[in-house]
Length: 317
Image 1 (cartoon, rainbow, N blue to C red):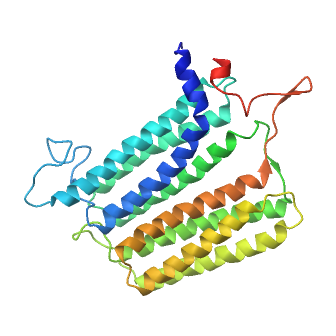
Image 2 (image 1 turned 90 degrees about the horizontal axis):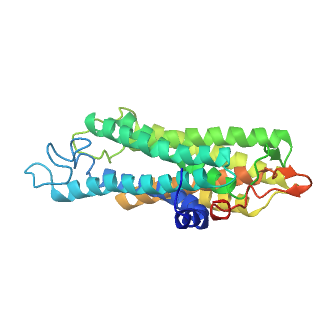
């Protein structure tokens, strides 16, 4: 496939910027989704893919406030923005020379994830914001944030198999910690599903005590923190950058404090969105620590290091 040289130069110059942008975009759209929820705008556009029957955009309607329509429509529009950024990641990875399979795969995960999220978002609307569909919608976003961080890391790494920088027991601890993070995020969606912010006044809630679910969420946070402390002690003396660890500790502590304030103050709307932002930040920081404990060497050919990790699209067009 022949492409203009200026386009390949553009892709090569901004490939890393696209990857960083997709991290921000995947986390950011989860925050805008929370704004849809706390403003009660989840059914501001009651059909999908159209906003109303016969119209892709909001229209005057006696039963749906204009504010709710535009909040929900704005979130749908941002899905297209995330899709464009993800598509640029795919194009940059595809036209890079030599083409790197891992980078292409991670970029395709971002684009495929956007498509999946659009479908799940449509099902969420068509089912009247069933709580579990909203939970799935959020969890997919967090998974995409994780893989977006891996994409950013892949651009500076080589293509050899990952080599651990710490003993295998610590690698296993990180795997368990990632699983606990997943459970922590899942429990957080349960708290929200049983809480006061349904996305629409008529939406059925999760029939479970909020206090019990909040306690489960807090217990998982303490477990995550405990594992983080243990990991910190164990990492001493190993050739691992300390900054990702310190960042993760700071973000988790801030998120924990925010969660307690949120609970004590009756779950005000602005704190809900800040908590979702914090959840994305915890995922980013955990994934960054994950990548810092392993390395991937560059392929070596005749004693010379290849340019796989640092090559630009333009230089090989």
